[in-house]
Image 1 (spheres, each protein chain N blue to C red):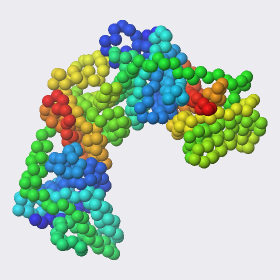
Image 2 (cartoon, one colour; image 1 turned 180 degrees about the vertical axis):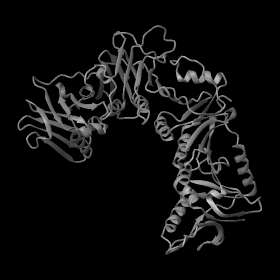
Image 3 (cartoon, one colour; image 1 turned 60 degrees about the horizontal axis):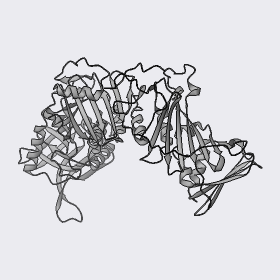
Image 4 (tube, chains in turn blue, cyan; image 1 turned 90 degrees about the horizontal axis):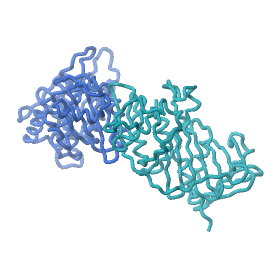
Length: 325
Length: 305
């Protein structure tokens, strides 16, 4: 089992400035999954084995060329490697590698790329070798090697489960609506979470997103209308605008033009931390049969409005009540 | 008053006009004012509606009462259609949390408040933007009919009162936490001064002397020596949640002692946001000066053994 690669400048700054801060907020420990074509950071894909239980699934997938040059990964399991790592440690190593790297190089020399590889080594005081992700950085005056401890590589069966979970997540919601301002949504949810722990989310084919918390004493909801729609759409029926949002949503669900699910407020708050990765667009949708609430983050190729297909970033929130399935 | 012109979420209300439909163009000040009287998490409040405005009352242990007066001038629209004065109970915490929903940056839009809903709820909804709407329904209950005895009368011919900068009052009461338990408030007409004295784990005396510093006591009125003791925890509740806007403006809080030692503390909270364009005013006049919510606390003195 081998892995060795050099970071691209864009790739490492993407991890440092955007993805690792977001991934760290979603959960302390994540899986790193490397395949011959992609590198991924994953949360909660193997179910409730981790310390954080059945939190939201979060997938950040990068085409290998976006993050790395000279990317080599090999294993007896179809050249796939997966392990878990403490996100804060990984981020710290990357930040300090960048700091060393930023030392101005001698005239005319381009700085050497930051290298990362998988090693198995014995640390002082321990009897057996342990796996590490090692970062090697050469600055103008110093060279630094950092070892980030990682878990033992995942077994063949666990890697297969990881891949199965990823494949299962490919099923897209029929309708996705674009939330214009994620920060604003976060402000709203920060206040909503004082009111209750369970949130019903409804997405209609008319471009409405409705969030509602109900307890025995209070019902509070927030409705976003006329959002941009991807996928199946329908014309909103002419309904008296004075009919409450709750009733309008129920009617849309009855007509089969909306799906509604209940999710944990805690999960939603966590998934909203993904805005730290500064996506260009965010879409909400409910997977067929109300299987989960899907949040898809989209990135544009810098300077264009074209989707950057080399990044795929999404969250899937487990549904507490199948709702309209 | 005419019945409501803005129809709302009322379903199955028949032709009955709601008791109240009003619109506040910004609820930040209302949240501040209500937070001021929120001294514990699960606190019931009684709301009373009238043609003059909304009064929210909270009470604790038969010793402490607070009232928030939201007068009609604070609302951009105020349509009152009830006969008598409808009263209902609700959870103060929920009311504050729900109003707080409408203060989300970017969502700040006028809020319509309506009572009663189809199931006697208090209904709130944003009415500013057609594309984003926040709505809340708060379950209300029938308030207790037990009469609270907080009747306030001046002790003599002239009221015994002083006005002090709000921040100083809060700081002084916070400092008295150390001796704790019971705090004596002593009015001294000559030389004019007020002394707060705590005796518990130790002694601490804070004296406000009228002549010592002209900035300290803004007003002082007292024609007789008076002294009463109050439980520290109730005294503390009168300033512990005073919103930072009140401390920043530092207008002054008025402290009065009435007959039998009933203590009244009044704060003023600006309800209009500084620098925000005002919607239109119900009263139709210049908006800013009248946009003040009044808060009154009443604390009963400790009984002498």
